[in-house]
Length: 422
Image 1 (cartoon, rainbow, N blue to C red):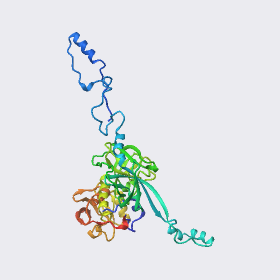
Image 2: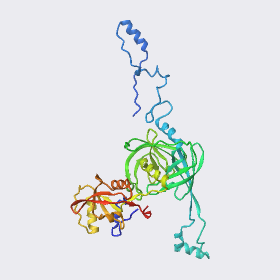
Image 3: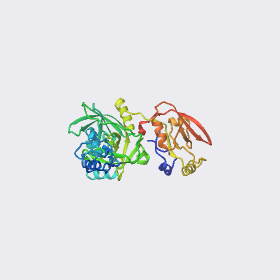
């Protein structure tokens, strides 16, 4: 993605968000051991008998009677299954293993420029040939079937460098899969296999998702096929910068369901067995932390990849940080500016404008504070990023900014994110 202009010092580069924007199973313990005996006793004394509601039938007298209807997924119930088992049974057949094979150089070209490397071979009498045969590198990940005609979604890093992959279903069938397209910016890829009448997942929504709700992950971690882990939703809207991968454009779901290498590309489910995200093992050092791409983002990118084989991301060409008194002080010192902003002033501070970018063409400057986009207030760089990502290339975005004590509106037309920044 973008890098800070050379005039920025390392502290600002460190702080800047490198965003090229563009219930329980409750049960009543009431039971009546001898309803008939009670009635007989009451008749003998002449007392009125109050009819006992059928819902209070005893566990003892009703133990052999089947429950009326099956328990809904997401609720404890049934004699043999809980909601996690039901969700897995519903979705598991549509979760696949993906084996990718790519070719990589046996020796990095940079190694030939290493003086120690060259000296070793010179002492042996000759240098190695300039072109050595490539070696094969294999990797395993997960994916899930979107439609019964063989459309599959996974992470881009699972199939990176591969044109074809091997797709294995839970029932043991395997197919050669064609990598239709990849998008490194969101880490989404799509695969097509030649098959019909396949099991497919049911997509859910993250709109009503909240921390504390159940989360279920299915995949092939560490090569262990069809592994199920469960936990809760730990947090929502984790920015790429917070997660430690600022070159991505995703606001992640955080979960404590175990997600390890090999889980990448598998589904994250809610308690109803609906897919709410695509798991990604992006932090090798994560301890008890898992992340997933929201299903809305993954599906939107997948649709574009299936349609055209590529994705174009809207791009403004600015770098931003959250507004704070400390950041304003640093910018003033290092850029020799004279920004005067209140500590509680809302908005997002622009700390860099890339040359020959839509932002530069529109007249945005370092020190501008973005207050809103198309009338919607923004409070953080991810807010701006999300608004730009939701726009279309060539459309006009009206940014309300604060500059030199005055508010003004600047119209910017997003362009396609350059390849060198992806």
